[in-house]
Image 1: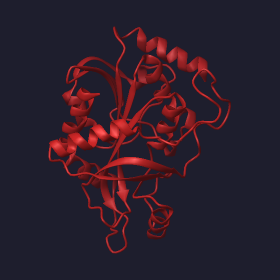
Image 2: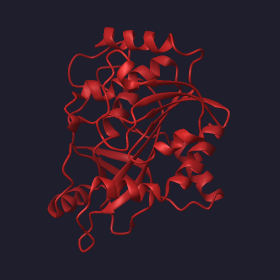
Image 3: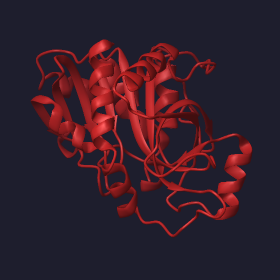
Amino acid sequence: MLEKIKETVAFINSKISKSPYIGIILGSGIGDLANEIDTEVKIPYDSIPNFPVSTVAGHDGQLIFGKLNGVDIVAMQGRFHYYEGYSMQEVTLPVRVLKLLGISYLFVSNASGGVNPKFEVGDIMFITDHINLMPNPLIGSNIAEHGPRFVDMSEPYDSRLLSIAKRIARHQNINYQTGVYAAVTGPTYETPAEYKYIHTLGADAVGMSTVPEVIVARHMSLPVFAVSVISDLGVEGKIIEISHQEVIEAVARVTPKLITLIKNIVTEV
């Protein structure tokens, strides 16, 4: 795996002229942030050695290098999921690649189902912690030059980045929630009993991504900020049939606020 990572990094470095400062993973329906980037280089995933290919609607499948509010960034327009049949090492390979390309911070976004009764569809939730109900991506041989065998997770989401996000949200009059994100394998949406179970565990929202990427980022000492858009509700009395298209549409309604938020955080960081 280490040789594959190095091969991928060498290929991408041959296509770009400078290292990005911030990496951004754009989740379901949030790819519109790419339109705000002063793009310098686009690299389709299917042209990158050892890179997986996104198979999910709403994930365009390319790396975008450029500037966002004057800051050098790289954006993943589309991510990879365990339920697509990739191994956890393949799902998280891009995070290791971004770190070796030079990023100092990782921003992650997703859509999720809200299990907190106080949440509503369209809420923006800053993730403060997580519960991992997926296979751990660090199972297997440890890459010692990337990080330790046993990884401290006392602060998976960077407190300084969270403070900046909260302050900017208040200044921009953007309402937000904070909460714990539970990660499950998917690809089925949860049953009512599963929603109840996940909330009982202590989660406020549930989704099928993000946590493996965060674990690998922390393995490599990479500070993380993560935000989730509540696209449906897993609350008793509010559970309705949901489709992926409806998830994308729910996220699209708050995307402008999310773009404003991320652009301002990027500038301040």
